[in-house]
Image (cartoon, helix red, strand yellow):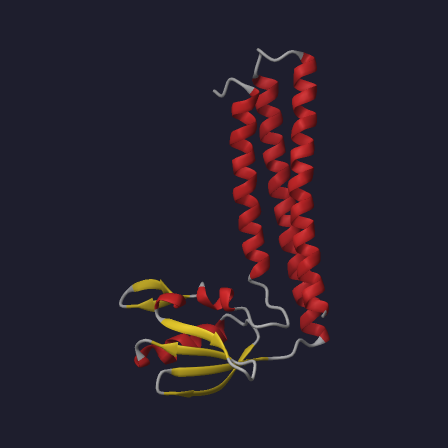
Amino acid sequence: MENSWEEIKKKKAEHLEKNLLVYFGKLEKIRSNRISLEIIRGLTIDYRGQKKPLKTLANLSISANHELVIRVFEPKLAPSITKKILDEQLGYKLERSNKGEIYFSLLPITKEIRTKLIHNVKEITEEGKASFRRVRQEVRDLIKKNSSFSQDQKRNYENQTDKLIKDYQGKLVAAEEKKIRELNF
């Protein structure tokens, strides 16, 4: 069992940081009104029986016409890549494809799509907050079980835990607000 408050705090802060990064990643994957190369780069494609990130199979860029341009290293992968991008429903429309180059445009966000995306953002944020609350409960349980802590120490550590959780929730809410601003732009 963990003995000191510093050990408990350090371990749970690392856990919170990992959780925060997971939820940041989920929010980042929600499309906005801009082409996101990061989202596309991270898509995995079946390649010779393995899942490979798209960034290892093609060069990606944004053209002067604001199109997503994918230059495939092996032209026979173009149909698989095209299918993956369209199946992910990230708001891309195939414009044209020729000899290992694929061009996509970003569809405009309708009011209905925007409402759905904002709802998804809020769901992800609530999921993250619930995750943080579970960590808080784990810390409280560890504090209660530790007989070497005085009652005053336990209250102090619980207050520190609440502040830590509040800080992480604030970071997540800030990311949520930023994504909603992107969607409303």
